[in-house]
Amino acid sequence: MSSTLHYSVSLHVVVSSLDDTTVQIVQDQLKTFVPDFSFSPMREQPSLQDCIEFYASADVTQEQRQLLIDSLDNDWDKDEDDDTYWAYGFNTKTFNPLVYYMQLDFQKLHQK
Image (tube, rainbow, N blue to C red; front, top):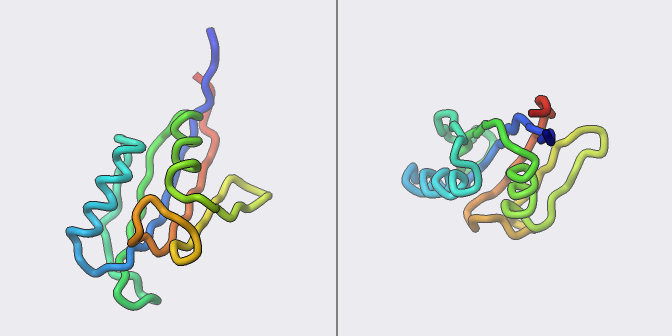
């Protein structure tokens, strides 16, 4: 029996829009990568003008983890001490052009 790594992923997303429908489109796109994503309520981002932020979380496999890293942005910054990635949409190519900022945090869960 082979074992598969599983991770808890937390994703913070800031969208350059105040339109709830636009943010819903971004969330729907994220569900194409990880159907089990659950989302926090969206809210206006307090330190940025005309932006909405939300969080997403799920448990993912190693394959889904790699899919998120490979698909959500083309040039992540990464913290060497933990499994955290972040990107700003104004200087990278994100999965949606209205994504201003994203941060991915992975925590190993267990092997199945």
